[in-house]
Length: 330
Image (cartoon, rainbow, N blue to C red; front, side, top):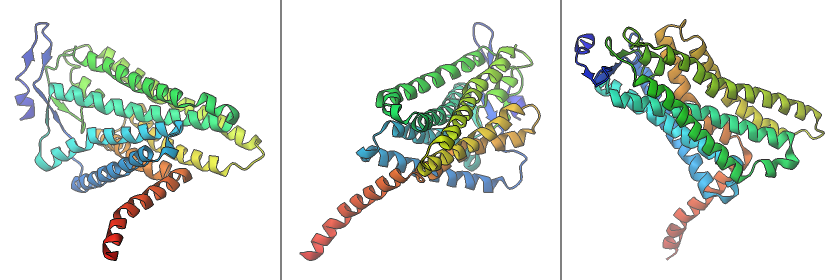
């Protein structure tokens, strides 16, 4: 039915064929997927609550208004945006069977999902830079890592993420889709989308971009993070103090790096060799698990954040219980 309905196309003046909609196949052919949708719902709720709590604590506690927590706040904001760009549409597909998405909505979905995915990589890179300077150049830390420099780094990261994804989106608008409109993914993924235009358009530029952009936004930051931790490990072995606090922070960050980059590598290196369903499941877990685990692994294991959170909870509890105590006394 989907393939038959695909014959209704719109043509612009340059004879570029654009379908009025695409069909997201989602997680088809995988047994017991209803349990996976329940799992995604729980992950989404935990991600929203956890990251909202992180942003609230950082915003309310002035002791956390340090350069590092600018990036942590940005990471939490990115986590909320990324899961919101993905999970609600998945649940809409599962609960109401609305798997059709218009051409413009598809490009918008592609844009926002990848902007937030790229920002995950950039945030982890900026945090590794913070740890590198703090451990290897502690005397110059406040000069190299200031509020201004962190705002500049995060702002540049957002601008770069937006600009670099606009390039493949722009190239997709030049493609003609004269065949199938079925996207073998749970969102408007770049590779399955431009592959649909292969029978009637030159998709070589899109194919080149699909290899070049992941290298720029994933592999170069990953190489920087690995190099920074080589320097950090060398510094930890040469300092006289044990540096337990630094090691704990670095361990939490490394866990997040592994959770994010390992599935990404599997997805984009072996995209032509792994089965479609495995690629879709792997990419979905890569998209939703790090946002849920970030506040648990990184922030909640940071002692200064836990102290601030407890202090804020006591303050809120005191304000809530205080009027009740006064009322009972009267």
